[in-house]
Length: 67
Image (cartoon, rainbow, N blue to C red; front, side, top):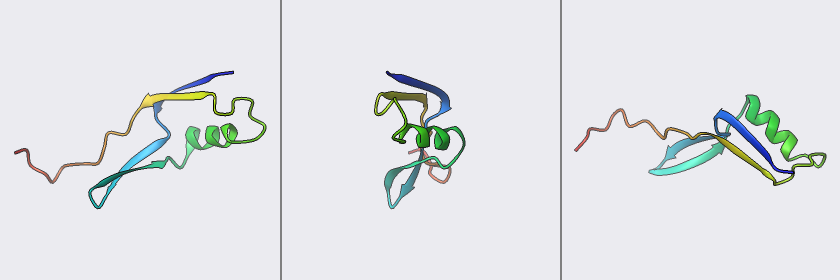
């Protein structure tokens, strides 16, 4: 069985540390609840799912000026 999850946001957040971009799992709501189910041994889905949504916009560049 293949499960397709469609939501406003993806279950990740994006941060910049020391000039490198890092992805981290989002900590709450739908992402947390579904992640718990999808990773459980009771889930019939296993690795057969895709999550479709808006990705993180990226780190803020408010302090940088266009060159």
